[in-house]
Image (cartoon, rainbow, N blue to C red):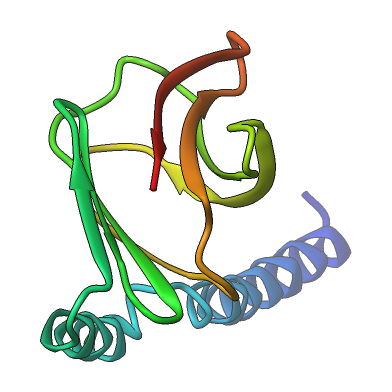
Length: 133
C-alpha cells in the first residue's frame, strides 16, 4: 500500500467507526423496548376498567371496553400470519384490528364496538376462529 492509500484507508475506517454507532442509535431509538414503562401503565389502566362484554372459546378470550378490545390468546397459533378483523352483521370481514403472533395479551384501540371478530390466516386464506357478540 502506498502512503496515499494508507491515509484513505485510515480515514474510511475512522468515518465507519463514527457512523455505525450513530446509525445504530437512530435505528434503535424508536423501538418499543425503550418505551415499555408507558405500555405497562396503559395495560394496568385497562385492567382497572369494567369490561362491557366478555366472551371466550378454546383458543381466545375477548374483553370489550368502551374504546378498546383485549384479546387473550391462550396458546401459540400454528399459523404464521394471523390477522384479527372486525365483522359486520352478517359475520363477514369488515376492518382490520391488528396482528396476533404468539400466546399472550393483546390490546387494540377501536373506534366503535364491533359486531364480532374473525381471526384469519392471511397466507392460507382460512378462518382460524370467529366470534360474534
